[in-house]
Image 1 (cartoon, rainbow, N blue to C red):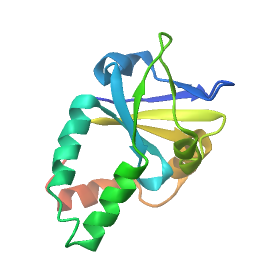
Image 2: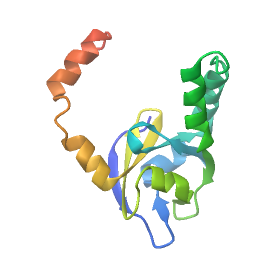
Image 3: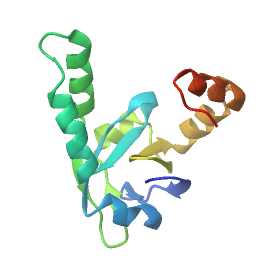
Image 4: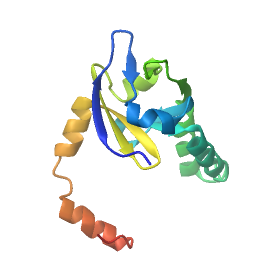
Length: 146
């Protein structure tokens, strides 16, 4: 399970360091794609295969929203590998989508990593959208209690 938050600089060649804590679980080959909220999602091969199976079951020809989501999610996806120092090179289109330039925040979100532009992550976490109490209350609506 991926948990935690780490901040790194993007190097001069545009490479991003994957925190050492995540490298083994991520594996040698993994997938990066556009995520929601203008970040990137990073999945191990095993998790990617599970998602791909679910996407294949969606009625993309008869449900406009399903088709749009599959196109959004898969069109920007790429297979990645780390170098010996744990760095990855992400295609420029994905970097632009997530507005990642100089600083990147890598967060663990259970079955995936999310890569955020650090300024965007700071803005997202400082928003007064929902207080922790409101989030907990909303989780109770779906049966999750703390």
